[in-house]
Image (cartoon, rainbow over all chains, first blue to last red; front, top):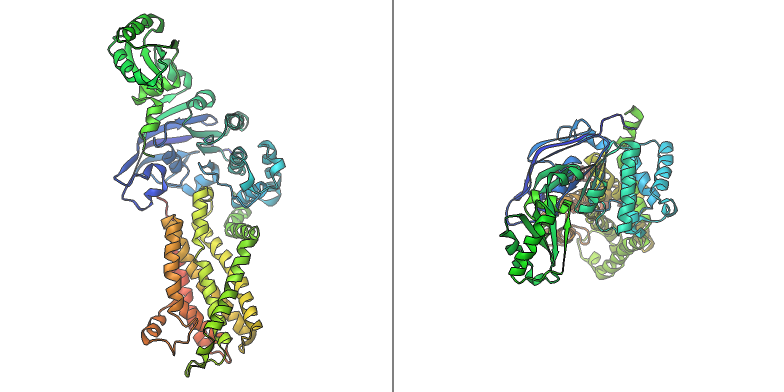
Length: 340
Length: 259
């Protein structure tokens, strides 16, 4: 097992795309019209052995951050340290102590699962004998033993992802980076993968840094969460802390039809008790200090404006509310507004 | 990290070359097409230009004997011009990121691709030479001449592969590479003595051909398999080709620069 402490630190990372030759390589850099500021002073730090989630909508800067930390890209400014090694000064040393799973599979389709793992191990210079037992161990652990002799292109999405994670672990890295590992997986596949990741962090003390745009995943599985919006970390902490920081409740109103949502938001914003509003489909959320107490006023206001309410609930803050609070827009809106 | 482990890491290019060969082995259709193509060239051009060998001053009595080294070089050039495609595919599928986040040097990635190209070119050239012999080509230069022809076919293939890799890495885009390759490869072939002796082509083409690496390869190969080859000439052509190869290999390694 690696002796090196698996800490990760990003310090004031900045990166803009535009005018540069390779801008097209990164998701956030596709906008050719002008300079895209992918990272705008992004900072966070990860405790060794923990599961840390970078949570944010597409285009927030998560992938750019991961590419910088895994030595695939260089920031315009800022500092990054992984496992005590300066990423910008000694990228070669960083590569030998990290495992990286990118958004795309990374498995060679024409090679079998077994061959993919052996290829990875040999690139890292593992001796053949040790490698063989390590590969067998990983195939068992990731439930791929039966499919080991099949070409990776025949694998399902979930199997491929498991193979990717297994490959990234062949050389027993101290830090594992995964960029949106659960995107495209069904709920069962997501749960399985998360079970394996949390097992790794508790079992082998591997530090896991993962990006996701699934609020529920970050909420459920990550030890700490950094909320990323427009190239910056707008909030960081445990899911519980982040939610507790938001005093008060949400009044969640289902109007049954989307047509009245905008009017309802406007009406609620006039109320003194309402701090913030957001909407999603036919649902309007109002942030208030005390849900049960604000409820009568909320309903009276809507009634006065002739807006029908189908159902209403008072909820404790969700991570969605945390996001809204810090980023100033709801998660769904942020997802919709990005060009990426 | 102990010494033996570091040595193994340095052998990463061999591991990666093995990966390419395994992939090729799993695609028998690709092997079939690559081997069929030169046979078509040999038969088609052989029939089409049969009479040109009779033109006074052409310099070779048997057109198949003249043509075979040309087809060897042309095939080496054509096949290697697609080398960059595997990089583009690796970039699209995330395989490239996997390698780049591992302690593999950029030089090893380029070396692996070139080593693979060298292996396939050797096999391909040998098969074309055999087929050419089967349909009547003569190689009075003997085994040494044939070996030299294969060697220069490898040199031109690797020079082209380096260029193709560089284009693939810089553009990251199949269409760009296809457009660039086809635009380059056909003129390079026809502005050389691959099919027609430079004695019978317009003067400006013969002039341009003198600076064309494909012509260097075709000339060197043809001289080498002929009777009493002047090895110094073959050697100097090979030297120029080696320089061209060094330049394109260097360019493609530079193209790996991180963004």
